[in-house]
Amino acid sequence: MGHGVKGTSPSAAALDADSAVTVAATLQALATPSRLLMLTRLRQGPCAVGELAEAVDMEQSAVSHQLRLLRALGLVSGRRSGRSIVYSLYDNHVAQLLDEAIYHIEHLGLEVEDVPTESA
Amino acid sequence: MGHGVKGTSPSAAALDADSAVTVAATLQALATPSRLLMLTRLRQGPCAVGELAEAVDMEQSAVSHQLRLLRALGLVSGRRSGRSIVYSLYDNHVAQLLDEAIYHIEHLGLEVEDVPTESA
DNA sequence: GGATCATATGAAGAGTTCTTCAACAATACC
DNA sequence: GGTATTGTTGAAGAACTCTTCATATGATCC
Image 1 (cartoon, chains in turn purple, yellow, orange, cyan):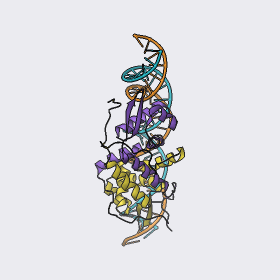
Image 2 (cartoon, rainbow over the protein chains, first blue to last red):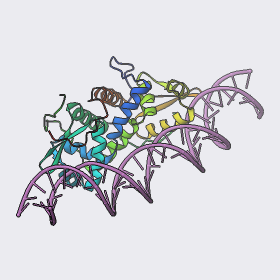
Image 3 (cartoon, chains in turn orange, blue, red, brown):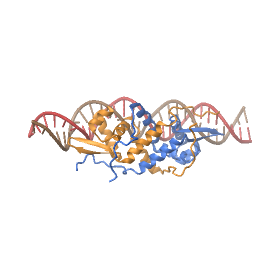
Image 4 (spheres, each protein chain N blue to C red):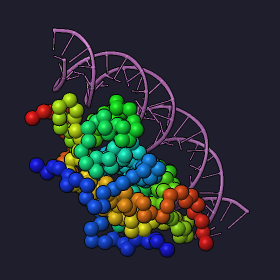
């Protein structure tokens, strides 16, 4: 069936209102196709801005704006190298977060189910 | 330090534009404090709408609207029980996604770092 | 120094999203 | 049946997000 959660397992996530805000802000960063593409590209290895823009097919300016967001959240970091600036994922937590998010989501009970409240 | 990604590890997440949209949509569902609180509450066990509203301190109507979204994405499901409707996380992928997201994010290089592009 | 390349930044507009309020629906109780 | 309870739904507005265009900064090359 693919349904039903085991109940409160040991590592159940608990969250106070404050952490919720922080966590939400970070997840927001992964919640856009453009950023997700940028991040998965970076997950494969460091990459300069222009290159990145091409890889994900966005304007360079747009990429730069998004990079700023990602930087502010501590998800990526950039180092200048000659004229370009090379970005990478900040650390392995970011890489794993990405991997796991994608993995779980692709194994979910495939989107779009809207029957509001049907009784058997 | 706490920096640097090992490069392309075996399970590197790859994503085409289409999946990116799907994944982003789902992550969007986790990217709001209200929904995050609702989900972590549900992660502890099933719960009726009213109860949930109280638990996360939101208006019932607001909760209902968000539940609809979560339902549409296949993250939660509701079963009528008498007058109330009891919601639960849809399956373990959802629970794990939540746990892992929270875990990784709480172990990230703590938010807000804005130095745009510093050279060494 | 002046031109050029690579990136960042600011402002503005279109499009979304979240919440609230008011009304509606389904169930239970008497 | 009528009334109370519990949830859902729709409309409307405020707030926020993403992209684009134009311009600015910093580094390199001649």
